[in-house]
Length: 336
Image (cartoon, rainbow, N blue to C red; front, side):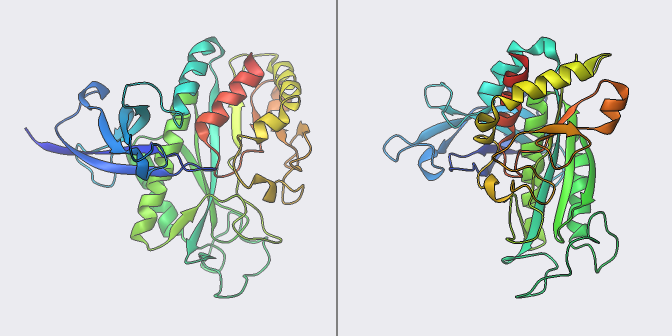
């Protein structure tokens, strides 16, 4: 029987933004189902998830994909964090989304998340002159050429890894600020969308190691007249995607307007630095929605307005948002 490596991946208890952690378990392979993957303990006192005098926490495998870096039968395994007695750990936000998805299964919610990020070399965005600034933003969005895009080799390899792993990645593009990029996951269901977003982030961090750079999800990595980094979240339910769905979308926007502050509280730390009303954002203190308006909190795509059905784009989540929390609150607010 051959041995395989399973990379157990989880979110720690770091605040205000959880960090990814992982460690490798060697198992008899091949692994055919999640039932073949055992629970695995870890030291929660080293991840802000337990005290030293009672430090054991458990990793429960809940989602697996092929490991495109190691290859073969090796796996990347998304895990929920459990207490030693088997109860759900407070840092485990996936468990709540699972309950929300089950409760609203008839809504058939879909999510497509646009993950922006910035590649850093030391403290500077990749391609920026040491101690200085590049030309003003403008030519970099979807740019081509060594003087306008930086880090394409990393981005292309990350895309290839996501495809090989079987993730529902739907595209990539250079963003407005040099050294900043975006990829998209979805549209797929709530749990799968959030699981795949975390795993795609892990692959991004991991492949960046090989290039000696780091990827940051900070919503405003460079102060001043530069775009921030968001995770625009495209959302729809079955009734939004059907004939007459525009009315359902408008009602959802009205519901969202009444819980703006509640959403902002889980849409990512330091988001106030990004949501200023400038650089294609709506002020964090304001809520509004509109058709084809990238300065709104919620953008309704022109195609959706023309067709009379489709989806909405919540432009408020920051790049460092917690996918399980964002998916859960969007369903709860619009479907309850």
